[in-house]
Amino acid sequence: MLTKKCIHIITLLALTACGGGGSGTDEQSPSDGSGSISRMPTLSEALSTQNIRVLDVVVNGAVLNAQSSETTLGAINRNGGSEQIYSGRVNGKIYGIATPFGELPVTATLTSSNAIAGIQDGSTLYDLQNGTVVVSLYPSSVSTTLSAFSGTRQTSDGVITNLNKGDLDLSVQWVGANLGGSCGQNQFCEGTIGLSGNDATNTTPSGNAHIDAHGAFYGPNGSEVGGVITVEDTGRLSINASFLGQ
Image 1 (cartoon, rainbow, N blue to C red):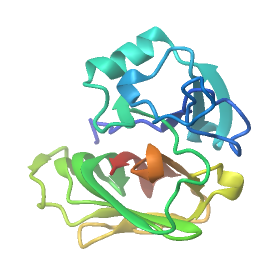
Image 2: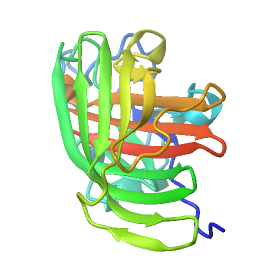
Image 3: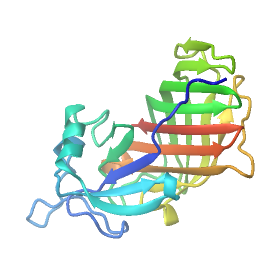
């Protein structure tokens, strides 16, 4: 009988640049008060009066607006500003200064070793960290691969095995996510999600699965990226993952 359950976050948050809080189609870099456009603030410079865009995959990506709190921003700052410059993870949630409208490049590849995942593949449980992130941006779509994790594997007999980076031949694939449109400005969603690799058993969710995933680009020129993935296919496959890249 399984005695361990892997649980990871499934919420994506993005702080807009100063002066944000519009519809998501008219975001601009912050002004210095003279009417000229100044540089974007880093995450550690973010103000408590800035708006937070919340994409919660539990409720199918509903977009909510809320004020960031001193407590939340204090937690970000205590983490050294963020794992990156314009985006970071606090208590599993992704926060970021959203890329302004019109600044996203046509194509790009962003990478890191900053993915975490809780996966149930059949009767096997994985609690994974330090995964390699590769996010490929195309003119109208985004594809993401999370692989080469470290962590633990627990089999149906309760045996737990420690995994060093590279021991596990299993990756999370999010292919063909739509960029922009109904997903939001400089954000991506939908697409196809599954597992690949020799250690994967159930690689493709069934037609009964609940699947939801959202990502966003952060910083000037989309220099950073973050996202969350959730798949719930009872008895077959469960994926709860988050990632950051640059």
